[in-house]
Length: 371
Image 1 (spheres, rainbow, N blue to C red):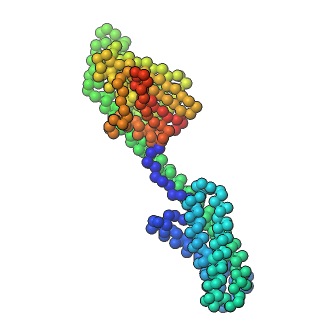
Image 2 (spheres, one colour; image 1 turned 135 degrees about the horizontal axis):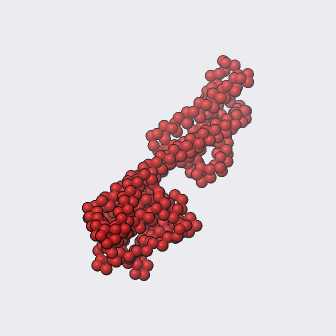
Image 3 (cartoon, rainbow, N blue to C red; image 1 turned 60 degrees about the horizontal axis):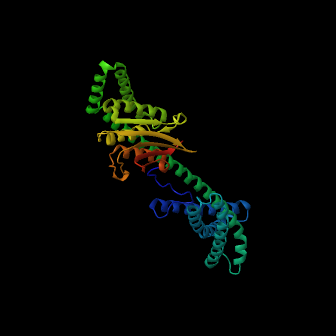
């Protein structure tokens, strides 16, 4: 659909390449260091294994282990979350666990060595210290690592959902704006002096000889103007209603061109409840009248057909004119406006294409049955 912003990837931390992402990464590191430090200290204190006089030494030891384990854990989980959470949303948690075990083991090895160098751990007691600290390090790393990973994944998914909703809202607003522009453009063409004068002259000429026909044309003109005014209030309209507007428009123009305008509408009744952007089909037909019927002495033939597949609708407007290329259409052309509306409403699933069928020019409007 259209110019959609890229949502953030679900993971442990934001992109560290941006100031906001780096600050968020630092907050997570600080929390991952301070949390386990406090937890380890409280566990030992509540178990009675240390006295308050030993609290500073234990806090220093817990801080060293947390510092050795937390930053690489956060960095690795962040990297894995950004690269694998979308591809393997469930398997990624199985990848987190062995990663945390590895970082906890390596961090404990480094932490115990650093404490021995600092004199906190007596010489010769390195492996005893490691044997006592490693189980706590692994368990606490798994608890904090998986908890933070789950929280951050849910938070980023929520941010992604909010961003997608905002993007859709922006696209819907743009669709309404383009729809309003299409309605105004269509209305301007309807109330163009030449159009009204030609229609009124045709009605005046019909009144003496065919008053019923004149009354019918007045009704069709009123219906056409009413539909143009109401088109901005909705983004989709039934195909049956669009076909009625197309017939009204062609019958009005037929009073002006007479036998020069020849048309046929062949649409199955089963497709009349399909939804499409208002004035979409009418814009294609009007383009044929303007560039084929009006410009040639012999006039032109216009044929409107519709077909469907399992999940798509195809509308074809066929004429016997010279044809044209979509690349040659200016941005302010009515068909360019229609293409933009199709992209906003259907994304890549809705498109407009021009093809040549023998000696006929065919403009096809293709879109899914449900937007």
